[in-house]
Image (cartoon, rainbow, N blue to C red; front, side, top):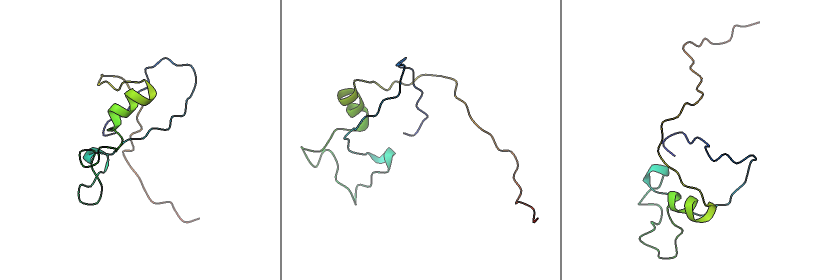
Length: 80
């Protein structure tokens, strides 16, 4: 994903999903090296479609607060 994903499902536990999808350019797809969904009728769907069809979830753009860590200064460790 090119943006953070915030869990707003309200589901109380953690779940593991095995999704099958075909990456696109935003997910590191290289049209020269890989196959594309349009080239293979049996290829899995794109990520957004796979999440909705296989997990029953929908990704929607929203504005939400997320925790971030900002490092404003770094120094190499001193020798002991």
